[in-house]
Amino acid sequence: MARGFAALSLVLLAAGSSVGAPPEGARVEILIRNYTFEFQKGALQPNEPGTIVLKNVDKVRHGFTSPYLVEQDVQVETAAGISYGKGIAGVYINPGETLEIHFTPNRPGSFPFRCDLHPNMKGEFLLLSVQGV
Image (cartoon, rainbow, N blue to C red; front, side, top):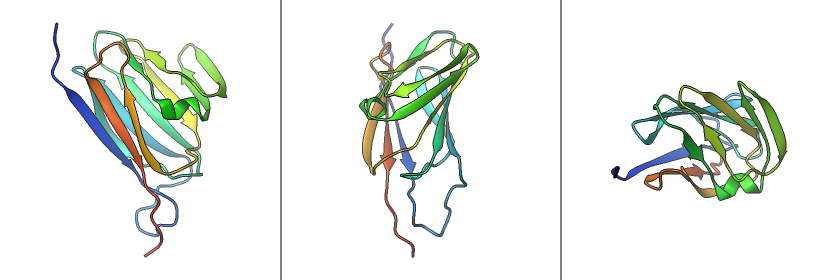
């Protein structure tokens, strides 16, 4: 069954900004629903620990993969357990499952992500360095 193009851009704000800086251990929450990635809330900062929380409310398995995560030290937490190490190619999220990807973003830039099982599901992280105003 063909699905429409679904894209999501997330702006993950950066260190140095005195306005709206996220707290230590910042989180970005993404809901997977109707074959789309829906940004819920949150922001991450370069060089500060952060978490991407993915919740799949669809009735099918989805993937989450990004070349950016391949170069990161990550820890992935699911109901089944925790895996960790240098880089991940991606994760699969079963229906009704929530997982967390813990890592420290190491540089600003634009970083695409996608579902490797459903090619029209795409998004992008924008990690911006913002200097204090």
